[in-house]
Amino acid sequence: MHVLRGKAAILNAKTLFSLIEKRREIEAKEKELKEFFKGHLDGQDGVLKAGDFLVTIETKERKDLDRAALKDHLGDRFGEFQKIGTYQTVAIAAA
Image (cartoon, rainbow, N blue to C red; front, side, top):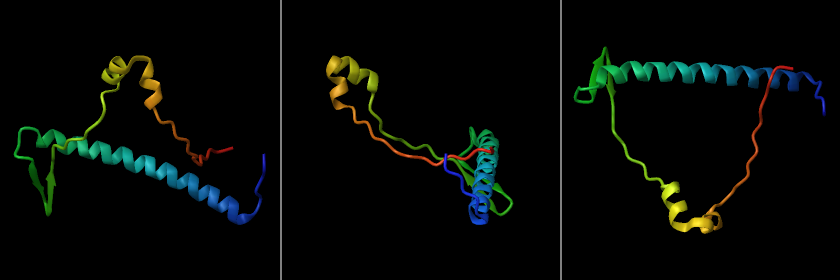
């Protein structure tokens, strides 16, 4: 394991750790608030006014492949059409 001891590296690690924690908290709060409004929007015309804000709900579509159906249809050949990519992530944890 390589160890960085410089002040900048330590500060950057602390900042990254803190930002990730804050992002998790913000995302959890965002989910909670969206669920709150979603409950109030059900059965409405999709628009609520809250003070100076309009809160809306939209139904959207996204297309996806039915993997189970493709696997049934292609059988053993299914694997020939799978594409596997690799990527790297940077993670941080308190030591």
